[in-house]
Every structure is written in structure tokens, then in C-alpha cells.
Length: 284
Ligand SMILES: Nc1nc2c(ncn2[C@@H]2O[C@H](COP(=O)(O)OP(=O)(O)OP(=O)(O)O)[C@@H](O)[C@H]2O)c(=O)[nH]1
Ligand SMILES: [Mg+2]
Image (cartoon, rainbow, N blue to C red; front, top):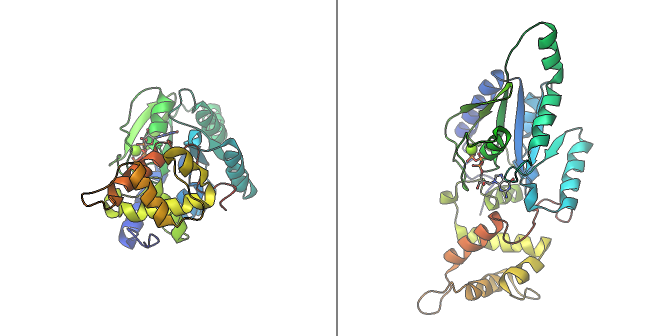
């Protein structure tokens, strides 16, 4: 499966980047949301370079789905490049207060300058990131109410939407893919975390590659969840054992790869396989 080139039709990307640049002009700063399970695949280096001199913050969301040590590792990798990353979990009550404080800190100079000039201006921030990373959930968490629509698939937010919050206005935006995916593995990671439109992907292929990836990161996860042995087995044999354990068989005894694939990927996305980081310390 060549995910490096999938859906990266240059016209779409140019349009999306242009829209993002237009929105940036309306804002005093940018909050860019990363999925903690694949933060480096979510990263947008083109945007980073365009934001070099502006208040800009990466938020590492969904930290409840990775281990503390992977979280610390990711933060340290970004720190080495001088990039600040704020870890959070938007679905955990009160879990996003640190994001708001960090962003206020980032804009403090501007806030002070406005105050000195007697200007009482609402500051604006754009919330951007790959589809399904939790941008709208983060905004709701910051506001303490359901101000934007959320959902467990890519492309829930369609147009842009302003949300008011305590002297600020946050701009919720539809997810945007990085204009260049550095390698096929990053493309796969984006697919595993639900960053790509599932309709364009073959879920059996996806599950096969996901199992292969898990065998490198932590095969024990498969044994614990599905009660299967992985030692000395091929990826396909493991996939088929999971099919059997989950009762995913079709008439005649063949395997229902698709139904099983959907279930396994869903287990990962919902955190039912435990804490897994695809780009943590072990995997890079
Ligand atoms: N476990 C966990 N799930 C989260 C977290 N934040 C968001 N989610 C879930 O992730 C899914 C996507 O959330 P959204 O807020 O709709 O994501 P989005 O980035 O706005 O997505 P688009 O609008 O499609 O680009 C939802 O099912 C959320 O419940 C988190 O911190 N932890
Ligand atoms: Mg959204």
C-alpha cells in the first residue's frame, strides 16, 4: 500500500495550506494539535517554517493513550530542536488547563503591550492539525462546553468556526495533511490513527501492516487482547488466528479479513489494546 502518495493530490494540499495561511493572518498565534501515538507523522514542517517568528505551540494530545516514558521521549525530541510541546489529554476533565496557560504565556508579550496601550483587544488563535487529532475536543475542553462538533473519524469539522473563550477567540479548522509525508511509514501511521479518510483505504491491508508494526513495537499486546501466540508465526498467520478468536469467518470456513481488520483497528483507536505509541522510544 503506497500511502506516501495517497490523497496527496498537490492541488488539495496547496489549497489547504493556502487556507491555513489565510487563517493565520487573522490570528495572533497558532495551536497545532499532534496525536501522541504518531506525533512525528502529524508534524507539519512547512507550517513550522512559516510560523518561525510567530507565537506557535504544539499540543501533544491523546497522551492518555501512550506511556509516560514515550511522552517524555517525544517532548525531549522536540525540545532538542527548540520546539515546545505541551502534553495533554482533552477527553480527561481538567486535562487541558495546561494548554490554555501555555498559550497565554506565549501571547503574554502581546497581552502586556495591548494593556500598556490601553487596547482591550480579543486575541485570536487558530487550532490546526491533521484530521482526527482532537482539535475540536481540545477547544470544547478549553471552553468547558460542547461548542464544536467532534467524532471518531477524519473530516468531522468541515468549515471554520470561531469559539469565544475568556478574552480569546479560538478558530476551529478542518484537519489538514502535512504537504509532504516524509516516508511511507508516516503515511501508515496517519492511517492507523484515523487521520486519513477510511473510505479510501483497504482495511485488510491496513490491519496487516498494523499487526506487522505491533510485532516490532510490542507483540505482547496481541497476546493479551486476543489470546494468541505470535512467536515464530508470520503476520498472516497471526491475522488469521485473530480472525478465528474473534469469530470472523465466512461460510466455507474462510477468514473474514475485513470484519476482523475493522475490529482490530478500532480496538487500537479506542485504546483497547492498551497504551501504544507508534513513534515512541522503542520504535524510532
Ligand atoms: N483517548 C482520547 N481520545 C481523544 C482525545 N481527544 C480527542 N479524542 C477523540 O478523538 C476523536 C476525534 O476528535 P475531534 O475533536 O473530532 O478531532 P478533530 O481534530 O477536530 O477532527 P476533524 O475535525 O475531523 O479534523 C473523537 O472520538 C474524540 O473523542 C484524547 O485526549 N484522548
Ligand atoms: Mg474537528
